Length: 482
Image 1: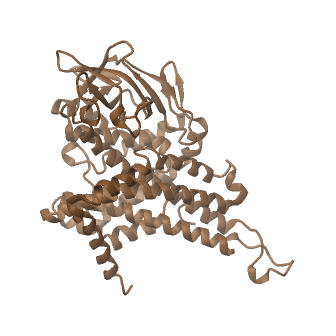
Image 2 (image 1 turned 90 degrees about the vertical axis):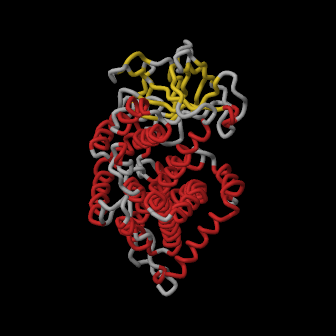
Image 3 (image 1 turned 90 degrees about the horizontal axis):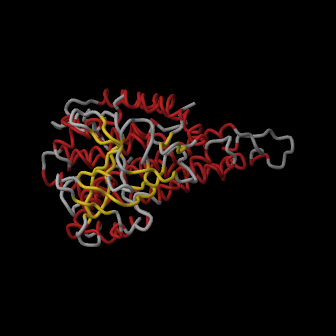
């Protein structure tokens, strides 16, 4: 029996036959890598996802997170997987070598993490940490990189993205969190953030929050927003942890799914002393935030792929084993033997529909990641620009289409199981509960549609969109006789 988590055969087909990622190894940036290295990574990812992460998924869902004396406690079954993830260096797989990472192509990191991110209840903590650390890598000062980024990339500290407020979700410009300037150049924040994933947890001793806020006196709307770094514990000059910062966890949300992920209310500055450092330039918070948000949107697509893929494979396996009814050819024979339900036409229809969508998600997401690698590696400036433009166009599609349809895939997996799929003793109902949020967070899918039509299709007078169509036509032409 093949894996019930991910289809490694299709992974390798997309990587090596469709995208031909070995061509990246011919560039100076990725010259140290080879197909042998890539295959080794996929094998280790399969082992880690199968033996470590998947076995804790259901227990993490049952146990959930709890708030004790102001401290969030994650499911105890997450401690070992997190430690092994840290020791394996998975968090820095595609981080630049200059920043202490391994420098793998993003497409390979995406393929590896497809094996992990089905258990997003656990994976949300290192995943968001990586995104927050990358934000500091790009926009932080050297002092901030040494103080925060290094520890975050080492998976010794955590990170989040604290953007949403009770009255400012999609309407970010309406946020009320206030930043008060201090003579030493630091700030003090006051306000409430809501739906903050991993706002607190007990996997690491410190957490660094990128927080959107408005400096006192700055204009209303998105143009007046800045972004700040808010550590859970202040950091002393020698790198040790100092006093607890002035923010508190008000509550953990009771959610439909992702029970192992602590989704919190953060109350900042109740005592007027919530320390914060400016990240980047003043009133450039939206620009900085969109780097993190766009990376997160691709991550949502990957989460959707992982959960829909595991749902399909479980449904396929169940359909091969579940005996029910007789063959259509012997429908009038009361003595006919029972057959696996995969022999029934409607079950086959559902399985083929799921398979087609999962493989489509995989090709789309890997291609988008591959474009990012080409943008970093190619010598030709025009080709690099084309790759960047294609990413711009595809990001809202990856986020919205994959998350919308992943919910349908998991729903169909339940349908394949019949009544058993509706029962908690089988895992497919959790897959559906966990994936539903993907169409909502990191920008609801209606917003992705507005972004695509209102901004992305018209970039460079439509040149980027036409470049994407050109790539699609070239692929069709190349495989016409296949």
